[in-house]
Length: 270
Length: 313
Image (tube, rainbow over all chains, first blue to last red; front, side, top):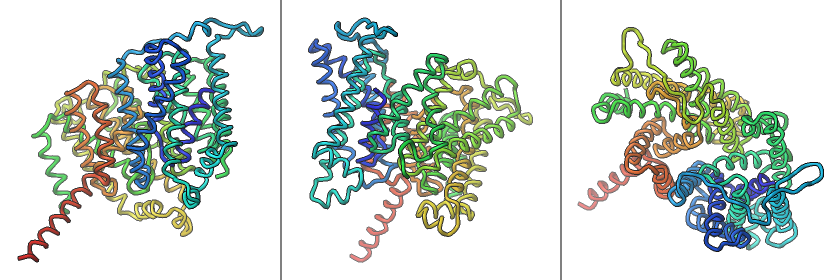
């Protein structure tokens, strides 16, 4: 589910803005570190979980406004270089601020320990993350499908020129989409922190996965991102059970296999 | 013999006098790497963000054979080129079926796959520690452990690579690739198989990356894990773009600037990738078009000024 969340955010950014966002993984990591720090300051996990992703969204807002906006006409190569440079800055910035050594983050007291589900004993926090991620995906879906702003965003994916001809400020739409994508990356990072701990390299690992989700699910395709996220998550857990070392490589192998059979992705119509 | 070639020859001769031999060798190796990418980026219009896949794979395979079987230098280079081409064929087959953003994402994702294989396969690759202990065997009585001898060897191979690349981009194939870059649909309408030709460009680019990868492994005696990582792929894109991707000589200028930049900032601060990131951002915002274009703009500006002063007098 976390993969779906990451893929969804990236899919929004890539689909609407039409740029390859290589800073998405770094935003994920920043989300996790923001959570740790706000938790340290305010002392309340729930408040931190609300605040940290908002911080990432604000960061995304600033990045879009200052950096990406001048580059819409520049071609993918320069956009890529920009977001790649940004990802270097963010992940090295994390090392400068929080140090090169990772640390772990405990979940809040209520969610520690496990829950007996009858057939399996499952950690409470992981269950919480699954439910949370599911709700967030649902909320994003409702936002995109049922609200006026969501409709504008979907229209932006389909045809930007037409949208701007209809009198909608396309730049504001882009900024909003980037901020929303950054928010989703940030909250995915914040939720992950208590499961996997924090390390400066966490963003890059996630970035590859997010790109796989988007490549399989299709740009701006919500359902595709969810399906691809689930597919990869399940494939990874099954392989991790039998052959731990291969559990990351299998994500990409699944992608390669799907693309061999269906070059246009899971739901693509080319 | 054109002016550009004279400049390249002069640089090859003068460079070892100015900087350490290892850095001079690294510049030409990176230039070979950049030449391979530029065939894709500059001439075919394909932005590959996974060139280190072929660079690293070739380095690992040839490095392993050099280390454990002590194979001949030319065999190592040949195998490296082959590994680069074959891995590029595998990756390229999947990637050329998509275009635009998907293409970029796929090259990156498959790069990550190779990275994680190298990361986990510690018995062969050494994982995070890299694969050390790669020697430079003696060839025809020349001891390549001498930095200058190895520099000359690298520089000669670079000149050969440049000549080969020049022949490729000026051949009919090169022209067709440029036609695909300009308008793929039209190139297909004229009867060229776009996907197959793009794959061919990918394989040639991979072969150049492979050559560079083996030379790199022999230069430092180690294949670090970073050599197959995505930052390395990004660096070569950066070097090619700052040099100017529209020109054959762009990547050479770019690799100069990039190696010089990274060598000089890396001694200043351990967190130098941060500065590198800042440099990326500055270049993208202010110097789009790269050095070669900036130079051309400077020249035309000077010409205009000269004309203006002449008109005024």
